[in-house]
Length: 221
Image (tube, rainbow, N blue to C red; front, side, top):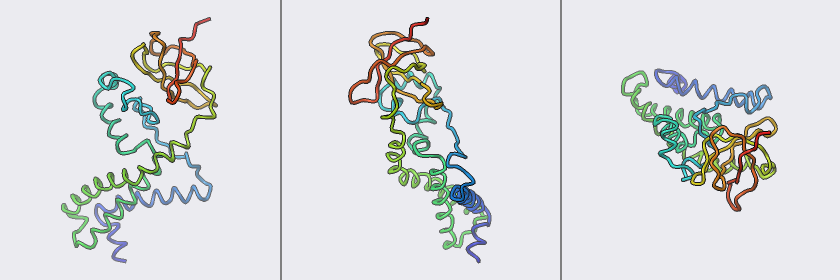
């Protein structure tokens, strides 16, 4: 009984409530009341999280930084490092809140009150630790969720799409197409042709061994 009371005392009420929320969510999923994508928080930072292009040299980082702004650029870098967006947000949140709650409950054995200033500081410390533990626990899940987004059965060559950033002979850009009502973002390059952002383009081929496609500008009729 003391343990339950401790879980809802002072700052500990936060991780306890968050944990109850995610447990309720998964119970509703099991009962069929919610679908898996009922809660789907979209991280709209103008960067495609499914692509490593912005972080693996596909585009000049300074160009992206100037386009997005320093705050958004480094926010994306941090979120990607923590695997936020690489796994579904509810998976990430469930692991994070479970770890945070467990660490908060361990404070019970230190005789430090969660209502005290020291208890609050320990909670902040535990939250930071939980973030890094969650990163480690979600690392193996990245490959699993990437495999669920396999595009091998999607016909891309010959499709029309919209260029999301200007393209020339020296850089790689991204383009977006709609497949079955859902947007698909691909990495593209031209064969020396300069194409401005927002242009309609056609995918003509794929670079062997890479998730990279050759495109040309679609002629207006």
